[in-house]
Amino acid sequence: MKPRECLARVDAVRRLSPEILEVDLRLEEPTALEFAAGQWVSVPFGPKTVRAYSIASTPQFPTRLTLCADVAPGGIGSEWFRGLQPGDPVPFKGPLGGFVFTRADPRRPLFVAEEIGIVPIRAILTELYATGFGRRATLAYWARDPGWLAYDAAFRSLARRYPGFAYHPAVAGAAGAARDGASRLAETVTRLVADVTGLVAYVCGSESMIHRVRDVLVAKGLDRKSVKWEKFW
Ligand SMILES: Cc1cc2nc3c(=O)[nH]c(=O)nc-3n(C[C@H](O)[C@H](O)[C@H](O)COP(=O)(O)OP(=O)(O)OC[C@H]3O[C@@H](n4cnc5c(N)ncnc54)[C@H](O)[C@@H]3O)c2cc1C
Picture 1 (tube, rainbow, N blue to C red):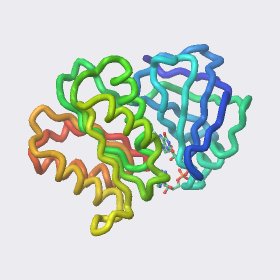
Picture 2 (cartoon, helix red, strand yellow; picture 1 turned 135 degrees about the vertical axis):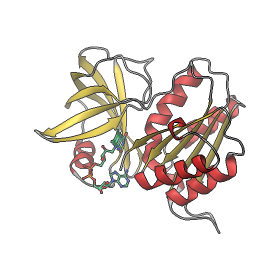
Picture 3 (cartoon, rainbow, N blue to C red; picture 1 turned 30 degrees about the vertical axis):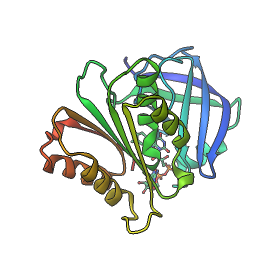
Picture 4 (tube, rainbow, N blue to C red; picture 1 turned 45 degrees about the vertical axis):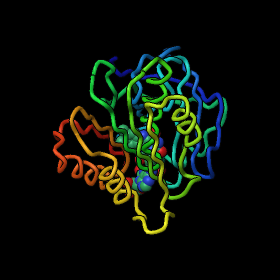
């Protein structure tokens, strides 16, 4: 799908936690957008200033897109997102990016998310299981505290319904464990992955976390190219 200039309008705004907001957009131009789960849109803030937001919803609903943002960083993107109200116009360019899971790929996916880096992974997992993906998948997800684990209840429900889906959430508070996301996720991946044969990893969050997790997987013998990543910050 070639990216194009689009216009949408805010339909609804929800607060998932004090600083995580979800916004539903209704497409106006075009009225439906074809995209792959895991892709993102680019919102313009000036001639050379844009902010990227992953699409949290799935391609099954091409007339409405849901975006989800952590507004704690407090810059131009966060302030814009915080101010969105039903009826507001939202111009953007999309869909963009290659952080997508190809169903034809026979490998077993390991998803690793740090805080709001969960958004594209939420779209990918929701779509996979909603459309009959019977295979195994693992999600390791870290946030500073339980209130920051967006979509935690949905992942718990998915794990109950699909025994092949293993969900490993973690928060900073656990006694004796590393308190930052990069260290904690590197530890979790070290523990969870015994054998990298037939594995493909999807890692999203901070640059330092992506490096730490990739180093763990490569040290276990995984080919670098089998670690797909999306750097949010
Ligand atoms: C492909 C892509 C997809 C993205 N998708 C999403 C998304 O779905 N939801 C979302 O909330 N953000 C997403 N981001 C990040 C988003 O584009 C903005 O960077 C973010 O909203 C902060 O923008 P800002 O203008 O408020 O702050 P900025 O002025 O851009 O950043 C202020 C500082 O905060 C750091 N920072 C930015 N985000 C975070 C964070 N979450 N945690 C800790 N530090 C951070 C930046 O590195 C910078 O140092 C995505 C980024 C990329 C590249």
